Length: 432
Image (cartoon, rainbow, N blue to C red; front, side, top):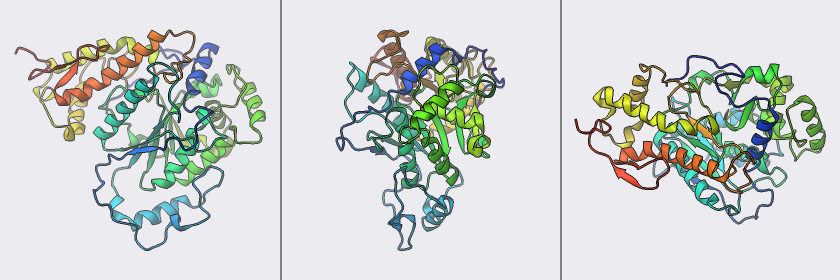
């Protein structure tokens, strides 16, 4: 799919991920909101939404041959390493040929805290954000696992995702990629799908900038709130190493001091998952860096402040493109052929001037990340007002929802309106 042809440098093109202390504190507050450190055990279980187009209503049972599931010593917990995972996955897939695929399978994971949100509108915004992910997964034929359980009490907040991903890899040996998406990240281009072929030689994809990692040594040189990781032995070993810098480690305090010393823009002393990830890349510790792809050629996740103010203009530019473009762009179609129609729109975008991803382009941003807003607990960064964050989230959610509702013949009256309007035939070419 289309993407920017220019590679942004570290400190230009409006990128807000700088090495400043303000942004550092901002991102820390945003990262902190994933799981409450005080969950209610066994109150809520994780829920799953299977949307894979290859699944059948009657999946055959496991054959009598033994697999890794029959090993009594294999556990789903992060504290017990797994060996020979690639061989175990391969053996399982041979016993379940119906799950073999020429295209790489993707499992998306997101989640939120086990308890109700304390802030007004928090649960509603999380529900809308979940709907956004459900819509995206359904349209692209991938699966979503949304977790509300803290699987390892010693790894709360932003560390909680690692045990979830580890368990999901074992539960989904058919998945080639696991895609973690923070609950406050919203898909704002429902057409776009990550170019997996670009990452063929890599095992992890994260939004980041090499200049900020290696030259400025900034802890905000990447964002660990959205990433893809390959379901393989490398990934299991890497997550073990990553977790060893976290709160479940006896060396947790030591790592906090090391990371604070390493990253001069880090304004808090605790060891966090993002600083730990940058450290592993920067130092070459474990030899991980060669398999980690720092993606910055499209909005793998984009900072909401530089996005939400442009959404109305982006909608207008898309309408203009469709009005002046071929009739196929305005043709009604069934949801099941969404991907093929998205490819037609992408082909037209490739012919349009300025239709690139990034602050200077008018292509829809792929993912808009509301770092620092913390919709659930309401403890927003003090630089943002409540209206600033909440209105921004509603704009992004309705912007994405319009792309879905159009298939059903409707759209929102405005990006801040809950009212929808029916769309006329040949929209947006109205009256001709």
